[in-house]
Image (cartoon, rainbow, N blue to C red; front, side, top):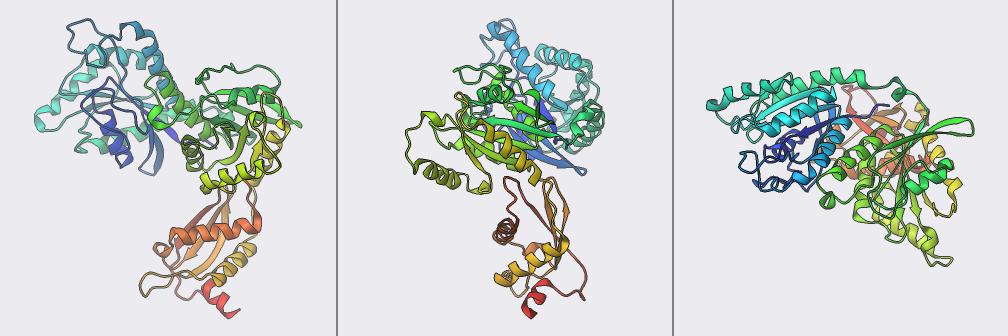
Length: 468
């Protein structure tokens, strides 16, 4: 199953990338400030336009050093001469991992040498590119956008990110570019073999685990956090079945994601999660569950991927007969939104319980394809509603008509009700728990959808349960 398209916003500092990011995702997730380089907050968000859902990534400003006295020099860019090669590498990583790139420029400032340098990188990438000429805040600056056709990057759209002017036109062009990006997907992306992403904080032991699973040193192992920058794919055979293991760069807490190669490594890790079936969340036993582990689990659930929690470095822990149970309870408490995920305690370095990793990951993957008979779905629905009837809003009562599992990978149950707006999230959680008690769905997200059915003559499940 293909992951969502990724759109990277690139450009020099202080051209309005974070403001555009906030506009596209519909909420203020990125910090915006007049000082270049302020972006230290959430890196990505989801957007939707013309029936297409995609990920938007705010990459931070790409600094291109200019000689003293140049009008391109910003307070952040001064003194960057020693880092030009690394800066270009940062840009290439972001561009390579995106499906479509939006180059954001300052229309009021005009075309700069830095814009031209970034445009040259984009032209060599052969990626679909749009130019968003930002800060067209009044009619006086509308024509300023045309100057940026000199960059040689196809479509230029004049916008005002802060006011929303022209953003709809930009999104229209973006969706058209997605069609161009389709050709870049390998047909193998759609095959049905198991794909496992190994994710977690830096230095949690992900690369050591990968090397142990494949039996050779495929990934560099180092005590220095952040050694792995790329998502590395390795195919192995497990009992005659093809399995792809994807090692990823460690994902730091949002406030600690530094501008540069590490920031773009997070994009790659997110993309790896998107194209995997199962994610192994590697937790350092010495640190326990951290806030960043919670964030990573959230990324996994946002993509509806199956999850196995792998507690690594278990050999470092002083323990007794109760330690493992206590540790498990702490994980369940901190990651309460994924209580269905199995937990494995291993030592990747020593090879302790390594065999369980593939066994559990494969079992969880098979659970993604489980299908329930429609009669069983409706029976469970009637029992759940009878045991705990839903509360309505005002005088209106929520009524369930019938339900069925409409798809797998992961399982999706569709409930036909009289009024979907009456379904409270707590009741949705209750229904999910009832189905999980009956069928387990180990490690796999269970999607519940509610749809109105205009059939006044239909007999509701609630009524049937009451009659029974």
